[in-house]
Image (cartoon, rainbow, N blue to C red; front, side, top):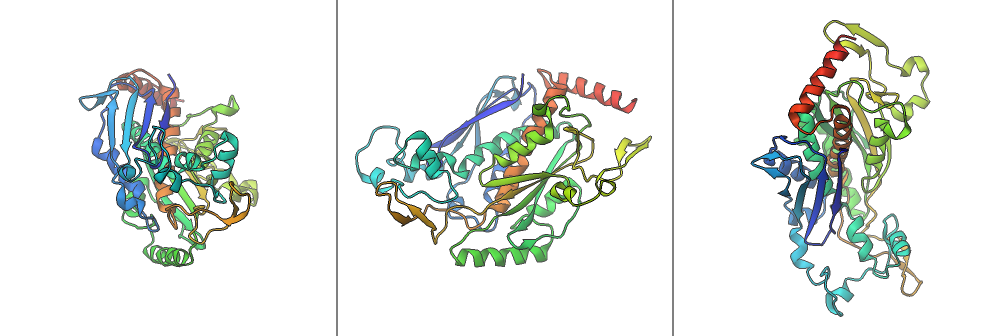
Amino acid sequence: MSLRYLTAGETHGPQLTAIIEGLPSNLQLDFEELNFQLHRRQKGYGRGRRMQIEKDTAQIVGGVRHGRTTGAPVALVVANNDWKHWTSVMNIEPIEGGDEAKRRVHRPRPGHADLNGGLKYDLKDLRNVLERSSARETAARVAVGAMARQLLAAFGIKVAGQVIRIGEIEAPPNRLPAEELARLTEASSVRVVDKETEARMEAYIDQIKADGDSIGGIVECVVEGVPVGLGSHVQWDRKLDSRIAGAVVSINAFKGCEVGIGFEAGILRGSQVHDPILYSEERGYHRASNNAGGFEGGMTTGEPIVVRGVMKPIPTLYKPLASVDIDTREPFTAQVERSDSCAVPAASVVMEHVVAWEVAKAFLEKFGGDSMEEIRRNYDSYLEQVRSY
């Protein structure tokens, strides 16, 4: 069975819910690690007041018994602590006047889903759009990705991420091992390795916030220990790099994705781009470089997966742009909702987890079985096939 999930819930509703189908039985779960990943999403310089309210933890309400998956669908719940302040506004029962009318959104924000969603679903209160299109939904996706991450870790596959750029400030390049990268960036307020860059980024974000503006950036995810051959060249929708790219762009406010050296490949010559193939008894077939970011022909090469995503600035501005009131159709400044001046460090964590999910999905497609033991047998057999090739 293919690995898949669905999420439900609104940003100011009682909870976010996710259901995961396709996890094998007997995956030993680390609940502290699961909640640690949710905590990481809430950190980062430039976050707004919402992160002081929410203390995200995932409650597993199905599919796990005595610390192990059973093979049944896994159900996760992440409670919204802010729900207590929104119970009348977000109540599922009909309500008249009061907070419901006061909190109605009728001035769409440029750059958000407000107007498009209102037009598409014929909704006159744009809160019905923004509540679901909010990046709060990524808490559920991080919880889901954290489960996938534990599956990958059981087979020695490690995931890490870092911020490459925030606005005009770019971090010095590095190619650190995933474990060291994770350790260093976790100690940084903006998820960079270089402390001087961290200080410059913090000052830059402060200035953006003082200007009533917001700023985006570029983040990178690295996946190490991936075997050769995940994904396939035989159909467009089986190419793993394209599936990862689609997942990255599905993250709220992400506008682009590149693999390996990405768009730089359009500037350089072929002799500067392609990765020479080597062979040794110790490593088997491997590459002299990794400009391809771990992919050729839609399949993993065995080198680390390297993926970058670009996040646009948050659409909600404290000095709002021009908009149109949908009630009067007259020009007006856009409505202001509580928001962040910069969410790039948090977005780096979200990207780690959507990439981990896609890699785990491809991993199970390749080595699929109903239990961890069956997958382990399939995996070990394949590695022996590759070693003796």
